[in-house]
Length: 502
Ligand SMILES: *Cc1c(COP(=O)(O)O)cnc(C)c1O
Image 1 (cartoon, helix red, strand yellow):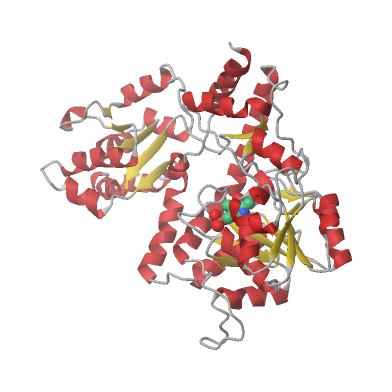
Image 2: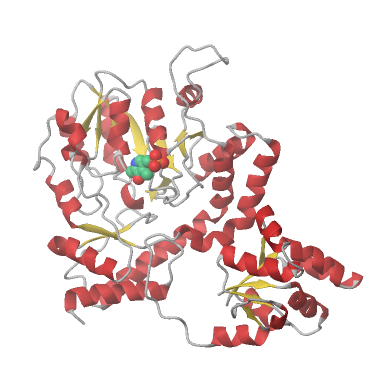
């Protein structure tokens, strides 16, 4: 339950010697408490001088929501500004109630204003049963990051430094550190991270790059955009990641790079891939778009190959409020090339020795990602816990004879997706879960070697049996840090109903 604390309630709570019941609920995280920034001023004025020092500690348990100019404007229509503003905020932010000492002060409150006792009895009462789970509900946990994010955004809008600049540099340093690489270069998207990496490695016309056919389109799309030819090698049937034995058979004198994908949040088996690369003098570009923070033999994704490419697309584990991406590297030479290519190959400004592109990251996105990075470890651990809960529930319900769980072969798996194999009944299961308002998705229904736009590469159905099988059998269930145990129980109950009819 999310509640907005009105100033009358807060003044009473802070003036009293007894601990307030609602503040206690917020402290123990039985509910989530909010205070409007405009209320803080009212507290300052409403409290005795020697009580004002209680305001700052209060804010460690409450989040501050800042009304927009439009909220204020709407609230000014009438003569009950503060009550009107509270109702506007709970509707626009999706809170459940306002807490006030005098609910009757609020006109048209539609039962949305509660006393402290009413809040308590709602929390003690029966919990609402789950009847819907979205695949991803990004805004569900926005309150957690709101204050950090809004500080970053205000810095940028107030200074007007919108492209690259200090916010991007700060993020680059933090990400390099997080990914155990020497450098990071912020770019416009995960797709552009792949493209600029290929360009920095000097890959183009006449070159071949070996990659997986079972991945998001951008992996192979970027190879073609760089002017090179994607050559596919089939995946391992357990991890869904490219297999070194298959790579080896594809190496020709034209091969210049290997682009392994760390799919769903688990690293590809990199040791044999790096050995092949060394033997044949190939560049290794990790497509780590789904795998920030994942590890392979105690090393982080992004530090395993020559370059690591990450995406800040909102649905990734570390998402921006729009598009963005980053490339990690520990090579001084590649780092310099990436920085120059990012700005049309210009160095010094307006003098071009090479042709790059506009691959710049904007400062607003960098600020958002920087603010969220502080929470990433906690979110990752929550995703891992959610995966364990699914594994346990699916086992306890005797469902593993029908579905295959996603194993963690190389810890640490960061579970950007929790993907089960549901065999030949996958499509039916998906329809059944959707009918029960459970979001689930197929990543990916058609492998890249049979995509229409790649027909000229000369592949045909049957060339990569494991990728084709995976495309027919896999299904991703909700796994984000926002989902709750009751939601997971609901999902597993529905899966049981589907397979066992009860
Ligand atoms: C998301 C993704 C990309 C592309 O990232 P964008 O930021 O959306 O351009 C590339 N590869 C893989 C495996 C991805 O999942």
